Image 1 (spheres, chains in turn blue, purple):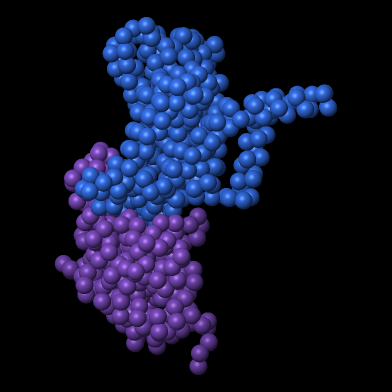
Image 2 (tube, each protein chain N blue to C red; image 1 turned 90 degrees about the vertical axis):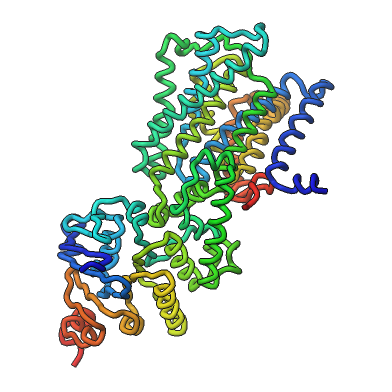
Length: 341
Length: 258
């Protein structure tokens, strides 16, 4: 009985759900029900979970308006990609016990580099609010992209090619679970309440003794760290790091996930990350193809993938009309909230 | 004077060309309830904002317990032991009543980020203590049964009380109340007065308040300062202020009463 009580607590529950998810996917993969492209979609979804939840810390919980999140991911991707590909020259043919520890180190260094950039951008932009902050973060994302475009060592506009495929489902799941664990521990604590107070009313927050500057910089630093890790995982999954991967449009997609899921809800970000990734990578191409097979003979034109931005916009408009608070609003699934002490 | 809590010397503040506060002086003794009154736009709230560091004064000096706090940031001033409420209630609307108070308690605890992420024993102990303390404070204000409700769903009077509870959570020595009785009916004002006396006793507070309701000010304050257009035009015990011709003039205009 005591054993069962243990699983009534939310933290063991959280890990049980994560483990169950992992085992189910692994099992389906064993029987070839999910493999190849569908598995890739799940892996990318998990990476978007990291990106969205870490952006939610900045936008949803701390109430800042950052729209250049992929800029941080670019830093992480290029730092870790450079380390594994150009400096350590790892390859998948080497034994796992050699590559995996180095890969994890590279990911963490990528995360730290991104965090450093997040810290640096956090400092001067703290006086800015709302739209102004958004413009600065947007500009910053573009600066990172332009810098990368002009560094020949990492391939410039060609991108960093030949990155070994060191990311796999297991590693991505581990990092996603760790991210979620850290964020939920952080948000449901004294520090977390301080983040939220900045969102609710910055002046009042400062006047009950919260060092708002510190918490805003902290949100940017922590958010950037996880975005950097996500960038590293992504480029070691699709084996290329390219400046266009980290431009405004992908940043926009992360933003859409956060708003769709609900500002200030980790659960919402997780759900929306899966929904939107599956929509974009799987349902949308199929749907558009089906649509084209009808429009081509009837009207003589094809509905291409570029229409996905139209679908995004429609999705946002529909959401704003019918459920402006997002899928979850500010609510959280029970296992995403650590037990109170 | 040794037991002066707050000493303000020659405080002056400009908004562009407008002199919002001019040569404001104050020596607030330990344990008193003093009030600042004056017509709208007289600069009362600006004085509060200057004391708590929301604005930096153009001139002058503010000493709290003999320490210069003139150019400190608001959160460091609060840490030294000053707390305030706001004219227009500024609660954290989307979080629970309990969390509002817990955010106020935040600065008295120092679990690091790492201990928080790893959920160490120290972290759990502190969280438990924070919750206990918050509930105790809420019980003072009759808000225990509301602890899980979102702050913005509370009725007006309870929001006012919660704001005071949140201010007390920072463990202040000096409490600044900005129009605590605004929008209250006479009965609510009476219970507010009782509450203020009670918390002064229990938390060993010195209180400085701004108020428009004369009935309330004249009864609760031991000493009143009257401001008009940034200037201090009168000062003294309530009985004296009530009959001061300059005060009557400021409120009602020249030749208003006779």
